Image (cartoon, rainbow, N blue to C red; front, side):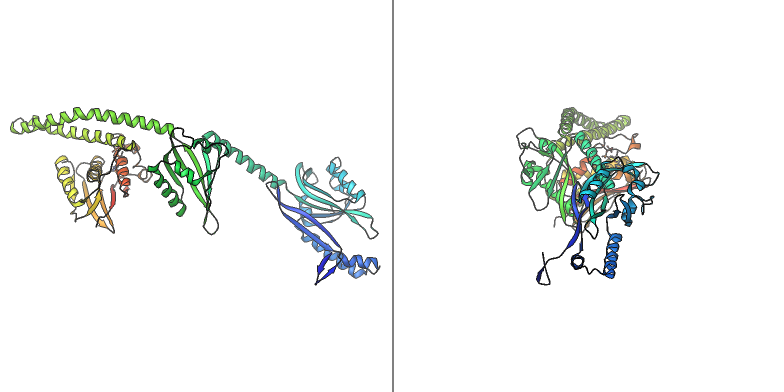
Length: 533
Ligand code: ADP
């Protein structure tokens, strides 16, 4: 019964519903074919079926067959002879001649298969049969190998004019490749899961506009979240130690806005009160086609043990450096006394030797101080004592010191205008000395080193340029890492902590530090700080 043109009508239809798209084992699209027979039924009843109309219907049916997006064939008579095969059906058997042949002649491999039985039953009972993901071993060509192939199909009986079954309509959709794809996907997923499990990484995901976090078991364990408890973003950020929280949140927000990956390291105090953990969180956001973020997801690595090792190491370094400082201080003062006494003597060798000793002891003090600094930095004990000062004066002081200490290179100190910044004066002084001593260390005696400090926009930009060995592009990005040294530099002594310290200090000033360099030509090291107006 149907309301059509505003009135109720009884119509007769033949229809087929076929699953044509299957995703992850679920049908996501079905096709519906409806052929209206009202007229034929009426005509048949009144025995007025004209040959022309019949022909028209046949044509309609035929074009429907030919264009249908599923394989369709008609098997006629008890022998189930292929009467009609549409192009998609033929594609299931690209190398076979089907038309006009009985099914068992054309596709003999189905003789002993359940499917043959089923066809017989449909023919005898007229009951439609639907198969989903059915395995039918078939070869594609006449002499090709029999393959395991999977199909969704429908067998429905065809009745002739006198209502007797005289054939079977077959609708079929091959899903072998879809299933294979799903299997591959599953395999890839399994491998990924194994790798994730082995790496002990936790996984998490946060949807935009929701406070809910989806977490893996490992993430749950790392954060000490009780089984079954849902974790919210608010709760998870509350676990991050206060001194890291803002930086982590800002880092993630920045990455989302700029469509970049993020990597943050921080301490958390787990929810269950277990001991603090040092985590590394890597992740990225995923966007819809309008570029709006949909969700962020990533991994969590528990690096507590490594971090604790690092802390032990740097505590040890700190302790040793601290112990070394006392004898070194007294050595320095004795040397200075001797030096001032020696100026009055005529023994030039002693004077020279003492000058050298003072220089070397000074170097050693700088080295030990940087070790002390690194351990202070890592235990969070480094403080930035800000004051407002003029970079011009600081650079002037450095100039005096540099010229006294180094006679191997030519220094050009470019004039610096009054440049006020608000920063830790001693630490900025250390960075300047560090840049200069590196320039001396990594360039040939006699070459020129230039020092400049200029205002640009609202920044003070300090630079040291040398004509030394330079740095190759693959190293420039890593110079500021702890203990990083360029490989072929081994003949020049050093620990690779100077620039790391500089970077950490500048970072705490919210400034920038970078290098421009060309291997073999020389380098320019820069840092910039906000101007104080
Ligand atoms: P160190 O000098 O003790 O090795 P730094 O952290 O000061 O440690 O420097 C790290 C590395 O950067 C050095 O080992 C060196 O390879 C490279 N480097 C630093 N300054 C320069 C420079 N002016 N020219 C070339 N290479 C440099």
